[in-house]
Length: 139
Length: 139
Image 1 (cartoon, rainbow over the protein chains, first blue to last red):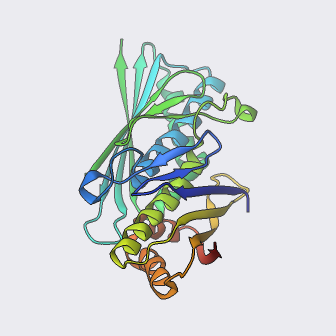
Image 2 (cartoon, chains in turn blue, red):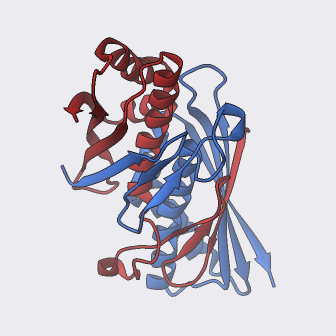
């Protein structure tokens, strides 16, 4: 086994989870008895997906000398209605800001993350239909 | 679509991700050019898994009147060697602390989370072999 995480109940609906980058709190929504003082577990999976692919893309753009001024990723995901609820559809939009975009290289970087490097996206593809798109904003 | 998350590049290998429970930072390890000032994306998935199942178990134990004094979850996971790297094996250990455990109910709560309620575990089962076990610590 390569990774370990310990997650400890802190009373009510709160948990503290050890994570390499620092501990983080989990809590449920108020509607289900929580106090909203921590992250929602399922939403963390979407942050993991964006972070994993985002890290690939920024390192590839640097290697390819195709840096942009700003960059963000919007994720929209659909959770199923019945228990156990899982994400069955995910739309990732890569938004690039700047000028004189090297679009060939940017598209290659996103495609390499999708097809080869992003382990979280590979995991998501096992349960969800994952679509990606790219938008450019000239400044 | 039921959920949205925006994740914004903050320079170097850092990203800030909006999440219902507050924003959180993502950063890579130093070995790959990051500064370790945020969470690692893949490790967040393990926190999501523990948090999701942990919330199920505490609410079920409360409903069943089978509360324990303390409770934590250890996750050990194995990441594959080749890109894209994904978790292929996950071992979750539910550790309960207290006395006069209502073991039937505790085991039922864990089983209901596994089989019926925990959406994150359902997603993990699509790419990983997930095993669970229970340990009791009399105090």
